[in-house]
Image (tube, rainbow, N blue to C red):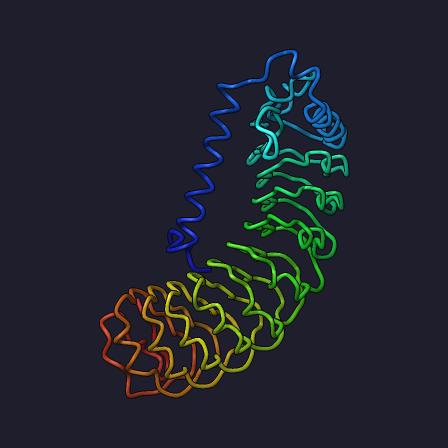
Length: 342
């Protein structure tokens, strides 16, 4: 799978702005701890205490003893828990974020986590959590970032994420989710979507192009059919799209030529076929174009040589034939009809 480059354009800016916000939360959490009287009389922190206590009962292993500090009512001192003024009342302290990434904790997520109604970010990537996501996550009205990647969650697509109104960053990659992916996922106002390396089986719906994401990775799932022509509607926001090793079929739609902000386009290791659209000359921001291991045929358009920012083009293991374009980043392989870019 193609190595992701730094996120570009609007996503880069949006992510930077939000991480500045998170840093502010962390600084507030470290420097402006609530007074003891506030802790004891703060219903939101009391709710948070109940939620986190219930969560510890659902943890089966914590080898690094990350949650050893999770005792007593002062949840703002718990490792991985970040407090800040509430979004609707700056005079009240509340739990604004959870970051337990790379903790190697195993267990499950209780419904009680829905009590953390002011959460802005929930990062538990790279652990060993199992089971489904709590249905009560629908109560997390302010949740902006949800990262549960690199765990062992299973079951159908977590429908609960469709009902989180503020969600902009969704990362559920490298889990064991299976079955269909609802078409309504592509109607969410997300900035980034990562669902790769699960066991999903679905087709890209006609509303695929409704997604306003700047980065989308769907790789290593079972995707039937082809890329819808509605992909053209993503032209104003999309920077990177990777749909490798999914089983996609059919030709690339002519409409991909409208994606003039895309820097990474990777559809390698699929069963795509036909000739490359001449409209690809419109993809003027392309830096990485990866088409290897498909069934493409015909002649590679010379217009690809004119893409001003293209640095890596790999179209090896297809059925192209000459004449070969004389691009500085394309090298013909020894096997007739196949070539590779560097």
